[in-house]
Amino acid sequence: MKFALVNNQRQEATPKTKGTCPVCNSPVIAKCGTIKAHHWAHETKQNCKNDRWETEGQWHRNWKNQFPQEWQEQIVIVNNEKNVADIKTPQGLVIEFQHSHITPEEQKARETAYKYMLWVVDGTRLKYDFPRFQKRVKENKYEFLKIRDTIKLFSIDFYDEVFPKNWLNSSVPIVFDFLGEENEEQANIFQKYLYFLLPRDKVKPDDFSAFLFYIPRKDFIPLIKNEWELFYPKLLSSITEIQKAKKMYYKYYKDLRKRVVTNRIFIKCRNRRRF
Ligand SMILES: [Zn+2]
Image 1 (spheres, rainbow, N blue to C red):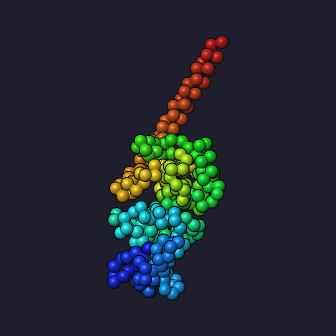
Image 2: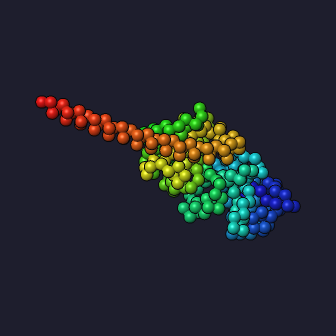
Image 3: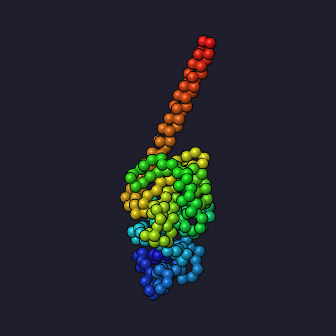
């Protein structure tokens, strides 16, 4: 963990300090070596939800550190149980950063617990995920809506072959980061953006497609900090409206076509009768 309580104040680890874990209240000690980032560890092994730091890699920490300290490692109480959210904004949005594999049960449990949340997923964990994503996006994406100059919404076919399987049926947005721990200066054009896969139960595309939008990496933090609570519901309702309009258009087009065809047959028959 990055923060522990020292005299009831949230504090980062400094050499030779002792504190208490804000989740299980057991004693923790400062680990201030030269290799790993400074952190707190339980003095004796505990079965505690706040024990993630030891397994958190650089990618995870880099992401967390881009947000204000008071938003990091926030205790969220769900059903009388303390959970530690990677980030919780003052508006109540929880962001969880996920590098390693997570079981579907654990994923569902966190989505149910936090409700208003999004995941940021390291898309470089498995070797083939990023090349597959690039190839599929080139072949199967259709621009649906230009939200802003820098934000574009796409529908993508065969979505189940585009994204890692375990993230397909989430009820909250999944943000894919395909840069991983690489330096942004070496990023290719795809890696310069973050990709939001929108939950299919909220936008209801057809059986084979999914909606996603992408934004430049540098726009992510301002979007979350300043406008996510308005932006996200507005986006969902725009998609629903466009889908409705599209359906109506197709119905109108189909009816029109039927009339034209009937007319043509009528004219054909009429002309034949003349002979
Ligand atoms: Zn603990």
